[in-house]
Picture 1: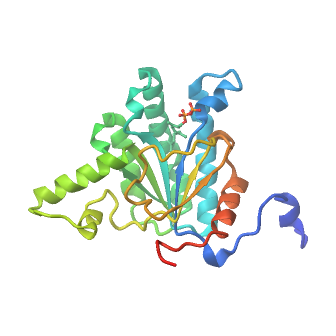
Picture 2 (picture 1 turned 120 degrees about the vertical axis):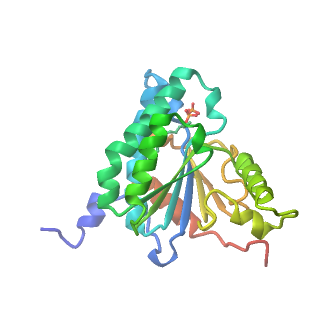
Length: 245
Ligand code: FPP
């Protein structure tokens, strides 16, 4: 039988967050998988694999908090330059994730999406991804967006080219926004980067113009519910002015 204090004793470290001021969109640069593995004398792939547990936990916690969109940087347009074995392992992991996780995503009413130059992903991964996206398309809970073969500069270039193809001869901010990969998605309120690096690494360059940045030294495979709560608590201390006073 739960006592009045049961929540507190089972999760003693969770910071208090104001449930009425939850960021609508959180984006995460999941960094530090390689260093996490190296510190344990394990192959890098096991770091990526361990990162899946953190993905699961972030999705669960984001849903519980009522966050509308969670965008995860799972594979950058520049990650192709890594050794072939690592690229192949990451693609296998992606495929595995969307297949194995589908029942849980359905149960939690999560809608899966993907942004990036998806047509360049291996055919098998593309197929499984498309199936999971279609299967979850009517879900009304959290939107989980995976950034795959994604680059912020590439996204802007692709948007301009599509606008040109549609006959636009000049462009303004509104028009360009309408041609981004997920034009209906609110811009991120909070961008989290794990492993202590202070870079954007070509992630959501257009969308993060006024996003609050939060960097934690925690490596992605160690990222848990408490870390997401800490990031949201810190976000709630910020004063967002969007260039105004
Ligand atoms: C960066 O760490 C992480 C990546 C390039 C891949 C992230 C992928 C996952 C967490 C698993 C797949 C995710 C999904 C959603 C299927 P790094 O390798 O650059 O780490 P390092 O800087 O310590 O070397």
